[in-house]
Image 1 (tube, rainbow, N blue to C red):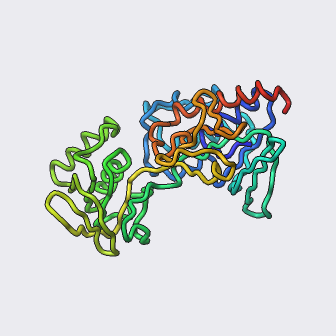
Image 2: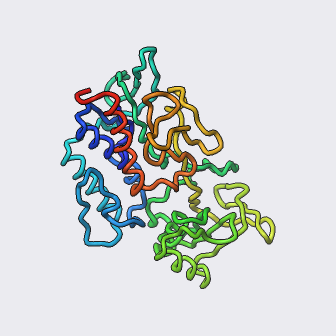
Image 3: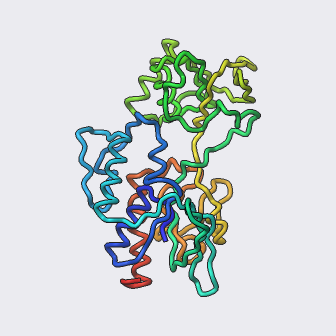
Length: 324
């Protein structure tokens, strides 16, 4: 049983087919659900060949593939290998029986709760659906979001972007070019070094010329429907805000791990696991992709997470043998 139809989960399914193992992928949304929710104009940092799975070539005329190209590629991979993916079927719990098998409880969209049995479970649930909260009043207001998708909504509006890494920089630039009045707020002394090399000089120049206002060494203290209250080197300030984007990063979801009895490293929300096999503290329960790193999900990308599934399936195949 593979939970999650992102690049890591798809790679695990391809490996399962190649090893003669029976499998099914349960996906709570659509194919590569996280990528669907990336900004519509996003360009990946990596090159096409580093996003390939199952040996299927990722052909692109561009040095850096776009979100649209990636979606097309993973659809093609799913069709090429005729992968068994059940969409809109979120997994609610995983439990281990006395005989070592797992019960996987899911909620398909149009039918009643379903319970499946599996000898092994591979969690490939990513780390994009659960944002790192700021923990300030007003964070849950309707005009506040931890996800940036479309800059047009900011046209002629005051927009506050919180964060200092890649997602914050790209959101600020796209909003500015869509006609928004953008203010960037970051608790650090400056922009992160990991920002894409073609984005960093752009955002730095826009800040330098004043096109995008920036407040560094500044933290958000509260959000209201009209303003974002911040505290920085010059003291407390209220920033006008029609829209607020909290680009504060994401973390892996741990509910399924806990339901199965797996140990979790609490400070970073990461599963305790064997780094060579990706097996958790529960025998035959594996984790792959971004969910391996928990809150430090920025350490796992498609280009390295795509190999996790192959390693896991190799271990499973050695234990079970073909045709299982």
